[in-house]
Length: 82
Length: 198
Image (tube, rainbow over all chains, first blue to last red; front, side, top):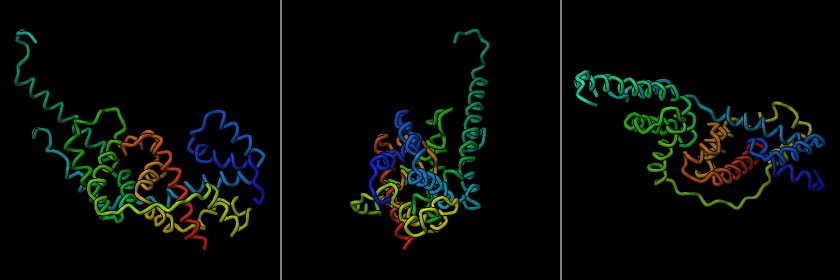
């Protein structure tokens, strides 16, 4: 985008809150009203959603084999041992 | 209790012990079911897999000792991570120096704009455009975040905790969670843009 459309700037401001579902109803109306007519912002909102998913998947590493057994060994004494 | 004679104190004590043991076993089992989820968060809060394993073990050792302080029906995953972040603060942080924060005010659209500049605006429409960023780059960019920001980003974006849960886990106000999250994500995107797109 070359010109600085103030509506786009406002929309950008609302991006995080929108994706986190943390906007007031009025703000949601503003964001969605703008997204309906603005390819530029809509693309970026969608991109951001995909990015979050990608970050979660990329950075998520499952528990190593064997750790669960080690954790289970840390349990308290069984039943009558209290 | 009166002297109605019904209660045999020994049997009563036995029942109490048995019921407490059952409660504890239930607690332990529920906690163990969450181990993988706890590990995934822990893994991104520390530098190496060994440290993450150790941290998770210390967390479970403490959790199993103090299981009575958990209120049944509340969020156990958050309770475990509260222990974990406390332990992590106690130990690792003494060694880590807090990096100075660079002043940064790139916009929220920064990464998208960079990608659009490199790949073309239409590329942003493609589902796979994010794969232009390497997975290793994502891991490195997270690791490079100053830890206060990283903890929040990891809890919310990886652990999928609410702002409120993250605030409780880290013992900071919810407004702090929101601002660290926002800034942390910006820094993350800036790093990704610089590392993956140049």
